[in-house]
Image (cartoon, rainbow, N blue to C red):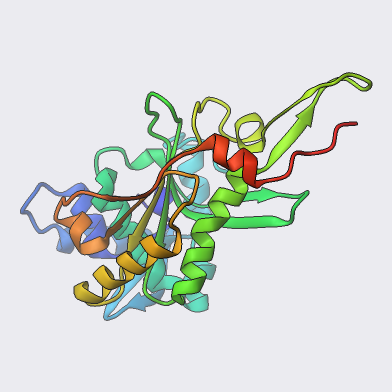
Length: 263
């Protein structure tokens, strides 16, 4: 589990490895203590009173050597994020993953996935990406707001996905007319017919405040031309439905963003 989500508490790990309505936290504590003694796992901070666990570089290497997960050479252990104070956010991301069916297909998740376009300087990290193909897209994108950023910044992060989806690249032999294509479809999600749907999860505040934040976000991104679904973490954990606040519209994106100049 730590190889997929990078950081987790004993409660979260027990939620994955034990049966429903069972409490396996004592077992997990013993197992993590043994891994720590072997130098394969460690704690670097807490979420409230609960230690946050992550693999050490040796633990990550042991996992890779055992071919338990697809190769992820650039993935960190999560220790730096915890030490920098981002532990609670990472724990909330893990809760989001578990609430989104992560227990059934945990190895299909990656966290902190970078999306960048050098030509425009746009670069941002997606909190979690689920590689669970649908009829039209090979992945689903997940962003979690733990109640620590301003409403304006949250809205900007969502709009960044439209900017990413709207960027096009010119292709064609020199001297020919050529054509333009979506950057993401040519260089990132090559098996997707549509830009991946973005799921935004709101956490870190009392539920009525999260509901207010949800409504404000819907207003702030009104008219966005990518598919955006939003939910609060408590509602997601209860199995309640997502709210659609953005619809994929490639024609509108093409009108909004300038076409690249051919060679």
